[in-house]
Image (cartoon, rainbow, N blue to C red; front, side, top):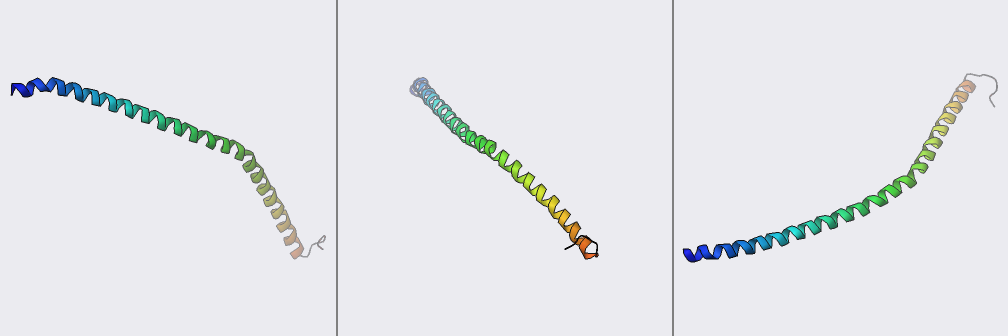
Length: 87
């Protein structure tokens, strides 16, 4: 039993060393993943910045088309009622 107790400090030191190495490995892995995520976020931001003007332009075009369609529909209704200015 005393022999087993004598080995425990050495085993404890070895376990602490292994734990230390594992913590360092985990920390390095977390840092590597964080760097990869940062790189992934940057292109999304670039894409978003480049798409914003296109989206605004398309939105404006759809709004203009909608207004023109409403005007044309109103004009056709007036023509259907036999009003002047049709044809």
